[in-house]
Length: 99
Image 1: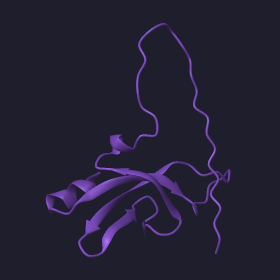
Image 2: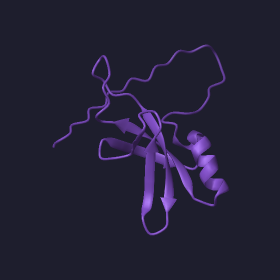
Image 3: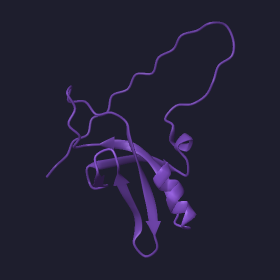
Image 4: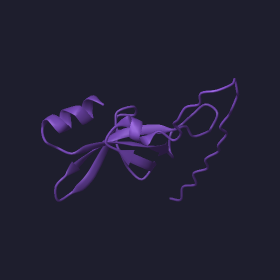
């Protein structure tokens, strides 16, 4: 969010991207939701930087959605007011890469 705010102070359009990183190593071998900022460079397009891993966004980053703010990219949002209920959200993501 600091990167996005800094870009905007310099009149550089910036956005928040939510998705997955196909090449991330995890102990259980699963993929988890990941996010990164992108800045728009006129004549070049959107360029992203992954501060978590210290790399430029590349083919291994799979963007699912983008928005001006983090809240605009939430996969599920909402609320419920009423009697006590329980709920769950289950998902599975499989990313296959070919080199």
